[in-house]
Amino acid sequence: MVPTLSPTQITTRDAILDATDRLMGRYGFRKMTMDDVAREAGISKRTIYLYFDSKMAVGLSSIGRVVERVQDELRAIEATDQPRLEKLAAMLRRRVMGRVEQVQDYAHSLDELFEVVRPSYLAARERYFTIERDLLVSVLGGESSAIAEALMLATNAFLPYSLSVRELGSPDAIASRLETMIALLLKGVNSSTENLIC
Image (cartoon, rainbow, N blue to C red):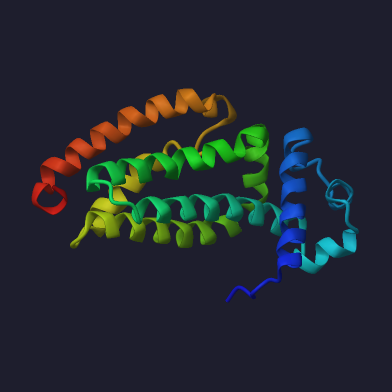
């Protein structure tokens, strides 16, 4: 269970993660130190350890914050009155592009970040993907868990954590390729579940 944080604690935690993101953009995850994070955030190193027990925990929390922001966007889309196919397309688009946009400043550092945090991230990723699958299921309706999982697997190929720095490229290039994939996916969803999502 995640403890409830006061506004000051949230601000300090976010300041640490903001500093981490900037430093990953500047130096990369490997070269970044906790001393660097403290200086960049304008706090003591000891304060960082009140929130995070290691550099790896800071890296994982940086990834987690990206995912949580995207999930908030997905919930907002789910709550709209858009037709189901449009809502589904918007959710798939934000699921990928929300992540891509947030990591652009340190995209070159993602490989080394994941090299360090991969085992711990894999456990967290399962929780993240379960939440996202359930949001898609709520839009699809009915017994559509398998369809939601298939949509996620297809769009996972566009996630920053799946792409190399070269493949990540510009957000516009990723968005263009993603739109083609989403159009194909929705044609398949529409034809196989017409009565489910008309």
